[in-house]
Length: 97
Image 1 (cartoon, helix red, strand yellow):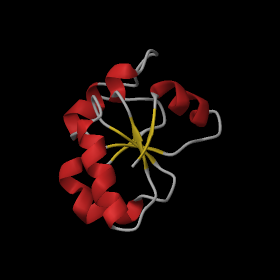
Image 2 (cartoon, rainbow, N blue to C red):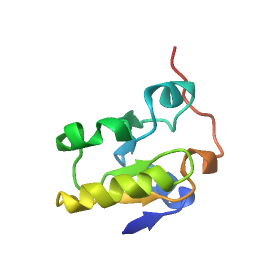
Image 3 (spheres, helix red, strand yellow):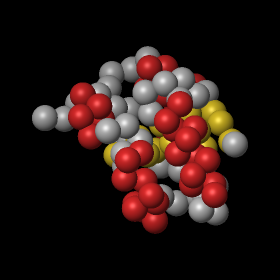
Image 4 (cartoon, rainbow, N blue to C red):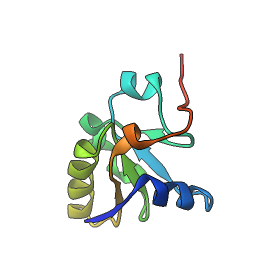
């Protein structure tokens, strides 16, 4: 499984990296990495068609994103797990609501 640190994700974001947050809606709304879109792990099986190769997958600490990456790779997608998840983000998180 391809994985990156938060610092590597920050570098990739300079080149418009696509980020998908697989936490549940309420967790995402409470604070997420800028530019991340939300596809909860509980909906991933139905919505994986929305994810493209090269997408960075993030969750709270890295566990759910690793499971999501395993599932997505089994579907033939080339995705990247973000180690440490949202907890590793040093900047301001985007909130909704």
